[in-house]
Length: 397
Ligand code: NDP
Image (tube, rainbow, N blue to C red; front, side):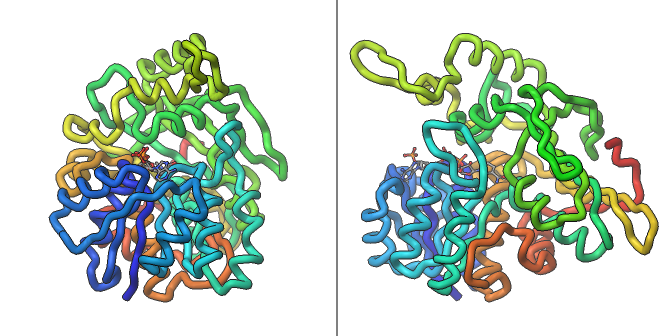
């Protein structure tokens, strides 16, 4: 059906490339491009399909992107580079008539700040160009929004309370490692917490609020309230929501390391002078931490991510829990990457599939919950991320 260009050859890009290659009826021509071409070549070798093309591109440069898009002429770009590149890639899409999909909202490099305003500002230009931009199509953001849209469509007249719960019950046997890009991950977790209640955003200290939540097949885990970007679009798109929160599990060992990293200044994102050159401590730290892509081989256990929702149906209160559990080892066997990359890369591929099949094609800039969730939910079951439902169970929240 269509030509796809994947930008980024990290953990998530590797999974996207595998899954795109597994669906040749939809993706008829594939290119993977990144800053380091050898990484793209390694991904193609691992997949074993020499028809996948590779290229070098600096996605911070609109000119380089435009040249690449004009030569390959993709219908859609799957952006799984870093959030810093979202706007340059969107600009290049507008200049060349290419549709867009990503898994994380734009962040400026010099401030750890997550909000959709920068990308929503492109809505009119994408509309006028007749191009579709799909924002936040990983697991969370991504499937978390699709689960919510599915719940709203099939189970509720009014969603009132939404809790997104993200548990990684895996063990990679390293003292400290992040599951995806360490710079992006540590920026996210060390921020103030934030949740939405009765029309207002309430800010907490970083990781201030936590409680035990019970995850299917895992058991109770200490879960911390974080700010997560999809809360911003979900409360806008489902205005009946009275409270929306996001929870993520962390082990004590991880939190102790994180505290030390912060206390000694290694989480800083401003430049410091070192031996006559300028370095950003967090970027330096990334260079010495385990590479998230190398964690898969020894990763045991599973992730469990879902939405716990309370609201009204036919005048009565109802609860609904929809979730997926993903085994790190199964993900590794299929793609060479662990469950965190897998749960992000599979939805990114499905989003591009939805676009190419014409099911999610509408000019403008959209968050995933603004599309029909049904065909996406059907593909989750077919593409390796099956979901389960509990109706009127105890949500614990
Ligand atoms: P990695 O760091 O493993 O990979 C990022 C890739 O992007 C690398 O190949 C890197 O190249 C490439 N890249 C970075 N800068 C540039 C540039 N200027 N030009 C071209 N390529 C560039 O990250 P992950 O794969 O773990 O994560 C990818 C994205 O997925 C991130 O945006 C992350 O926030 C998002 N994510 C979303 C989740 C969700 O559920 N929604 C969950 C997890 C991640 P090089 O190898 O040369 O450094």
